[in-house]
Image 1: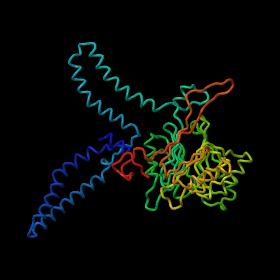
Image 2: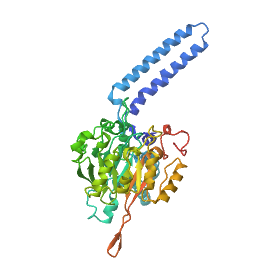
Image 3: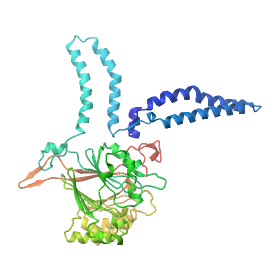
Image 4: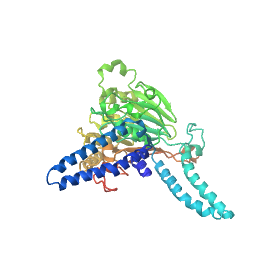
Length: 459
């Protein structure tokens, strides 16, 4: 059951064996039989004496259960849980299979070890599984700190690609960027008055699931409950608070990725008191040096700040042009103005919005604005008529839109081929953004409308 537990829950309990050694005998020999006897006594009793007897039995079982729960919750030895990255469950399954099969090999081949052929087979049966286990694990730790421009095609091929995850945190935002085992996080999702938060339920398990061991930087766009999450839920990462970047206009280098914070700038801080909380959102542009593809993160800025950014863009103070855009304020109609959309000129747009959210994000107005970008008036009217008859987001041939409230978590891979084609003085290098939604992939049964179906849609 260990591989199954690892697959569904992303980890395994090291104290499970000890817990079961105590709990199973108690339940098998005392608790279950006592409950059965107490129930039978009540059912066959005609005088009423059995009720008193069964009451004592149930009280005794209840006391035993309380003591058992107290012991399990009080002592740390029963709380050892190890988070394991996605994919490693397969290797544990293979290891268990090898352990079960190895005695058969040993018995079979040790009977005739005098034969050279038998020795060769026995040696191969031990070495080959080790290669199958160690090689993939070794390849999961490639060296990627070398300069992309100076490295060979093989080194570039082995460099882990920049991958972005727009997490499905409900009505809120959390974006995870991954390079190898290092991560950059933009917002931590919503936190609620009850204490429940998406950082603990979504972000932290995702970090473990994709094998993140180093959180390099964290940016909280602004102080709203649907963005701040709970940083304590990230666990005992070394100096986690020191990884938080301040939202001032500056640039950082993270591996092969350039991080440019373009808002708020020094001008914004002069009239910071006149700005709303949303308008102080941290606007960041990330550029992958290997593919030269970029993504623009806009927080919850409104049209007011978008106009400022467009003006700065036109004056060449900043460069808004990006390949991928996460829409401002989850797709609110008071953001994503036509001028801003045209200035960014993104080919793919992502909306972070909750299912059936009360704001109607992303709004129809915003979807139509993105669809209208780069199109003639007649083309705009035609595609708006098509959208009015559909429930899902459609797109023109220039802009593709995706929303987490329809496709769940969105994964974006910054792809570049391993080879380059030279045509005279020019290099033809095809780069692309591979976008995929993960809503209807293998999901825990409690997320499905039909828990007995592996193929039916969730939403």
